[in-house]
Length: 231
Length: 231
DNA sequence: CAATTTTTATGATTAAAATCATACAACAAG
DNA sequence: CTTGTTGTATGATTTTAATCATAAAAATTG
Image (cartoon, rainbow over all chains, first blue to last red; front, side):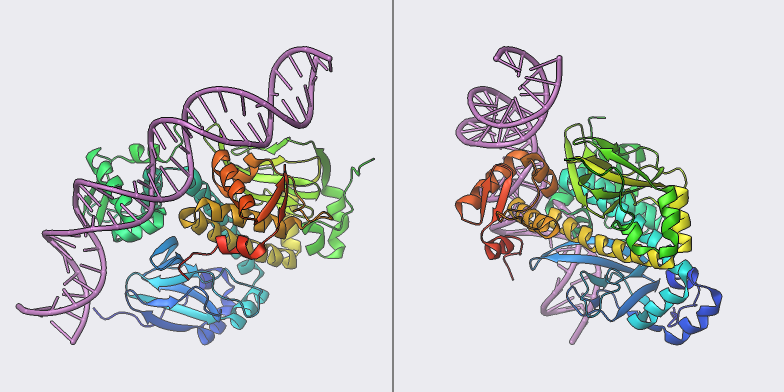
């Protein structure tokens, strides 16, 4: 049950994409820490000090609206980078919050070191650019979905994305346990609406849910919900 | 009234960010062409062949939903890059469509040359990455807005963004003429709803509209519409 | 393990925004 | 310059999803 308190210096986005010669510098400059379940790692509006990586665990990246609404932008799990939206700006603020969904081992490097890394590793800069391009493509798809796709489709899409990111475990259910509220925030809808929509999906035999454990039983039907009906 | 048919090799994102020594290569590889008003430059799903820049004019980047709905992701005007979401992938497809809103002078480079440019110009890669980071931050804000902000706020935000991007001309109105339908597609709402909301804003003295010419008369009031009321 | 907090569950009501319907104006094209 | 198309204008109706209200489980914690 003893957990690691240090990362292995080779799994995260940073260590994978920079040249080997730079790894000792990373090791010297990184700071590992454990974030407890529910712990806010940084909050929207906080001054930017550095960039984060997930070595183990799962972190939600979210953006608030009012006191009790939020949109979950993405989940950062093993290897993922977060807090990277603000680069090249001095004294900027994080545009999003990051909260651990489970106990997570986080790796942190400050901004100066991160910028040095970019300078020394053109390959890393290139990979980061590709990653951004991919995220942007995805973000634009989600924007379109939020604007035009009904909630049921968005929930279906959310489940598909979760399955893609987290895979399925031995019992066949998507390997992440989210509260219905978090699923709702990820789909961009309210808890109640998502609750109803999930029930419909269960009724229709598209998914099976046992509390937070959700299995997709009819991938085609789920996928069909994400398509506009007119095609 | 004679218009340019060639760009000046110095104004667009590409020419501004790469080293001077590379400019002759750009000049040799670029292809300029004029896109007429309403002309579809490429369409969602088309195979990717290269990257585009706007030398003059205005291009909407949009994503369809069904036969008669779309979300306008952004407008690309003087100097802007578009069609850049898909990089590092061979044989991918454009995830969005690009349509000229007015007669525009476009500059095109094929994918091979663009990737060569990235290799030879680490500074360009870096700038492109920063640009992506900025766009992503903006996209995430828009996602949150689409999920939680009412239409009126989204229209207000759309007008503010348009003013930021296009400025105001001599008569004080935002220097872009959009159909109400395009404004609606940009705000992620229907024509009718936007029509009503714009009328409200006029009534409330926030903006003045003379057909497609829109002036912002009360910036504070407009801005207030984009904030969540609970703060 | 009792107490508190969080999460799930579900019906009833309301509000927001989409859809439908229709008319007219402006503009482009033959 | 008349005809078709595109954009504007607006009321009525319907749909979707949010809000409100309340209860019961479940999970966490002192």
